[in-house]
Length: 412
Image (cartoon, rainbow, N blue to C red; front, top):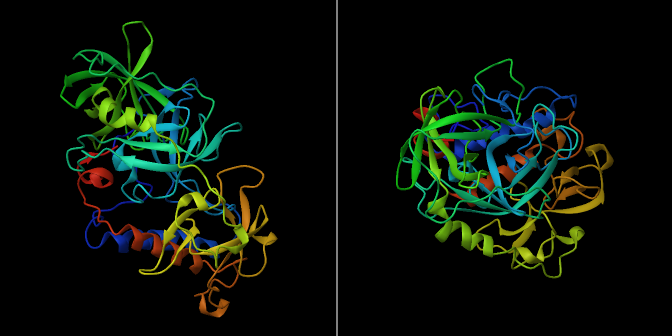
């Protein structure tokens, strides 16, 4: 587990130097171009393959979920673990704000409910799409103040949410033991990959909006950002008192956690009282290249109404893809016609995957830089979609704080 450096990217000393869009685009381009390779599965360098320092398995913590980048393809796409989160309502997850740094609050995410995500999800594990996300308005990247975000799931789940503390009455005292749970790094190469684990911390300092903790003997680490810190309440049961936010790079000395009780009145409770925008008459999946939209409610489930080009018409699409129509149900690219691929509208389900055909035809094979052997649409279709996603975001990413905290302190 590690609060902060839960990026799925192999960051080096050059990360954060130069335009953020160029570096993220390069990563996305390299990832999407992997479609040119043989279809047999190979290990991805972007997947974290380890999980909590000096921790143990946590099979009973069903309300602790993994936050992933949403998958756009139905076959051959690796799982990309971003962070951990806590279910605090049947359709709401609490996580860290810096977990949304790369793709932003309007990015494409999903959560995994289960004990083991990597290298393969356990049988019985479940994926659910994130419909909307919001960061705390007071979030500061460098200090991790109010490093909290809320995710609204596209559909409620059956697991029992974690109990929240009373407003301003979180049972926090120096010397107190706390339990931390997450899917992050164990610093042990022999530990299972991407597995939900738990460990014990001891509180050392309680501040106005957060608290610090030392290992006792465990420590949160990479991939645990946004995960829960739990203590025993007055009635004996555990209470969610903290969100894993930051710590030392080695995951050995100290962790900083955001206090949940100070988030309740102005952030968590108003969000819990809200709901998803009611859906209206949906545009047909097969006519999205010509049909325009004015709100997400008009778009089929899994798509959002977005304007790609300045001054252009808004259309229903996946944030990581260009405009296109969706046709017949599929399970692999080979079932779709030339120029089409099997795209994922929902994380799972019998009708989750459909043949996607971009509105703008892909380049001819000889123009696709050696990707002539890949079935379906040229991978440059996905590069174009990634570029458009970055253009719509228009943000920068610093080396310090948030997702860039790997250079100094862990950011989650």
